[in-house]
Length: 244
Image 1 (tube, rainbow, N blue to C red):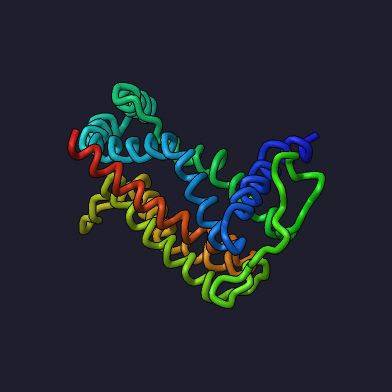
Image 2: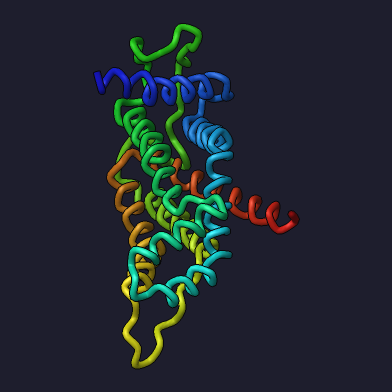
């Protein structure tokens, strides 16, 4: 049951869209198909991503108000939580939307692409739609790198670097954390945020690099394009909001 739902809703649509793009690209280059597929996915998800960027900006803007509430209700945890949620409700933001986007959107797409390339970019009769035809030949090389094999140091490195710049740009949209004051016990919330920022900026790019190395190189290429396009979308939304 679960396998059928996964195949029908995630794997087959991604596989068929990729094959459809491949069929209409001169030379049937897999790397061009991956780039085009990534851009199509990001354009389709742009409204969702736009709301997430807006949420991050609003969270940054209301941070002074949140700090005042934390100071006022620091001895009453329940009242503090209620007041903070009132602020979020007033500004119509959900601080957990980024997590939802990652779990319900990014991860399924990433896993779908992984299975497409792990199974090989070949004709799978059971998965191919009747109106989609598979090209006679597929060029799977990208600058002498076979996108179907694992262990590409170059692609893995590029994926990690792209993720680092994406993380850095994303963190610039989030609320700033006040510096530690001398002879003052730092709050648990501030320390947690510092830890999360450090992991986002350094640990995740390293994780992406390692993952891209052990996955088919096409997955690493997808992540490079995805990160670059994410940065471009964030810049676009930032400029659009600045003019409002």
